[in-house]
Amino acid sequence: MALCYILAAILAAVIVLYWSLEVHYFIRMGLTVLYARLFKKKVHILDPTCVSGVCLSTDVDTLLYHMNNARYLRELDFARVDFYERTGLYRTIRGKKGAVVQGACTIRYRRFVRPFTCYKITSKIVYWDHNSIYMEHRFITPKDEFVRAIALCRQRVINVSAEDVMQDLLSGKAQDPERGLGKPECPLEVLRWNESNEISSANLRNGC
Image (spheres, rainbow, N blue to C red):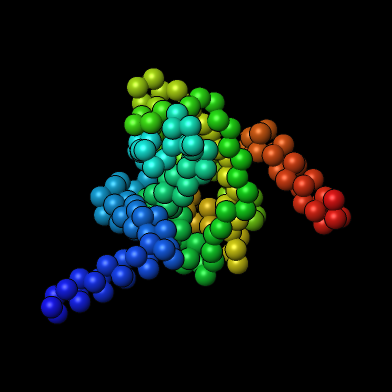
């Protein structure tokens, strides 16, 4: 009888957790961090990273035909934490008493990811300024190397200069001395995207 009560309590706790939190998300996030920390190779801050995924039945849209558009953005969370952990970016920001949040994101869908199709997400830094770090993410199907979707994200660095963070990572002793330490030119798409975001912000401030 006592065992039945224990099992019932465990079941009730699981139900409450799944009702109040997206448990799978937190479990997967924790596993992604641990795997990147313990088993994956550390990389240079300007190197791309790659994570793999597959479109499951829980990822498809209402037509059961392709991956739900919102799932792409959700998958980017896991790609980013893998990048943060392997490059030391998050550790460096936290070491300076700072934090990082996503400030903006745009994604362009080029071709469907069908159910049960494998894909990979590549992530890399394309630019940074005093306040933000800009990252590009690509969803690629390995069988044809086609870019199914491409996303541009602005990671807002809080309470510390993004320039200082990047300088620390670029000049760190652990980095390859043959790698260039210079800041890349701002890509035209990032420049125009920032202009669009600034116009949107101005409109909101003006009550438009």
